Image 1: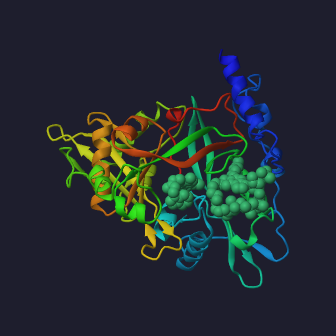
Image 2: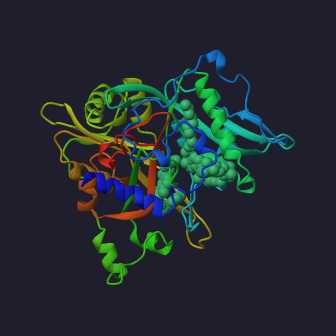
Image 3: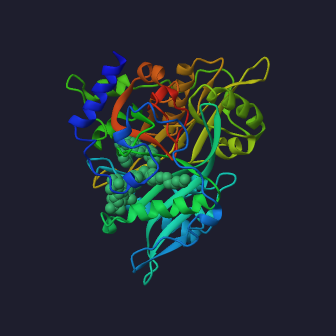
Length: 409
Ligand SMILES: CCCCCCCCCCCCCC(=O)SCCNC(=O)CCNC(=O)[C@H](O)C(C)(C)COP(=O)(O)OP(=O)(O)OC[C@H]1O[C@@H](n2cnc3c(N)ncnc32)[C@H](O)[C@@H]1OP(=O)(O)O
Ligand SMILES: CNCCCN(C)c1ncc(F)c(N2CC(C(=O)NCc3cnc4ccccn34)C2)n1
């Protein structure tokens, strides 16, 4: 009956005419195509073979006349501020346009400058006359393991076109240009996520939200009071202990990097697709930075060994057109490894710390082994889906979220 289950899925695609949707750009790209869903004769692995570097287009793609390419040097305060302002006013919004992500400048510097990063992959588009920054797209290098293969990839993110320049087919030009620059570094695969369905998801993941500040979330329209729920009942329902429960829990420090790297590498080996982390990468991605990334370790009191850790990143959202609030303070769970403290207890301590730090909501995807704690710790299913994609790499079947060990910013 597997065959007819698959048939049903393809049928669902056909019925909801997803298959009939035109993707004029994505149909030209080396990505899984909707028409090939379920075609098990297609081999897993790269879709196109690498070309010689001398054969990669040497000059940038053409932009419409009024615009020019620019490299955004994130070390420069002015440029970093221009990127921040563009994203603050034009980046991802929810479907009801109540919220817009408000990635901070220090967050962008953290997310875009990991070990081995290329400044030329921080690509902007300016208006020639005014030099105004009107579009952006980024890539950072990552060694991604897919099953038993470690593939050098790029993580592509922060694609943004100014609201006034939408629906002019600028996005495909941005994507082709960053593809060209990544090819010039002899890298032929990429990973990316989006809240929109494109050909063809590696995995379809669900957001879950753990309310920390019920009154504010209801006032701003993030959550609704259930019909049998009063505000005072909601406040009681989501109440957390004022201090953490795990003995030996403390902030991560530089001296913990080797132990955390070992824990994380062992843990991520369980998943079909996951990044590899060396010490330098763990130092970059997990050492705490205020208002960017929080990481805590559990040090066993007898043996002084590090047995567990959790981390979450800070990604506020602007609240659009609300008289009383301007910012939604959201924490997003990052990487967590438990070898002796139960994951539910570890995550409850993460919630307690997030509440102590005045976050309004704690977000998690249903990836890795998150599912069990989502239900137990009173997370609510969100309406946002996050689709994961690979560029120029086919997997025969889409993954379950629990097979995915990759968190993207
Ligand atoms: C080897 C190396 C490879 C490197 C590259 C790997 C791939 C990286 C891919 C990028 C990973 C980004 C990861 C993130 O950052 S996801 C976050 C994306 N950003 C936002 O949502 C911010 C607000 N929105 C905007 O700024 C614009 O609406 C954007 C820029 C998103 C589209 O601009 P606009 O609305 O003015 O449209 P258009 O007329 O120019 O172009 C229309 C075409 O663009 C396709 N489209 C629309 N949205 C997305 C999207 N999120 N990913 C990929 N493609 C997208 C669309 O299907 C259509 O193609 P087709 O359906 O006709 O075929
Ligand atoms: C390209 N990088 C992917 C990650 C970007 N991320 C974090 C993201 N991508 C798509 C989403 F669907 C999403 N969701 C978090 C859930 C959520 O909190 N929804 C309410 C809400 C509050 N603020 C905003 C801002 C924009 C969209 C929804 N918002 C849904 N997150």
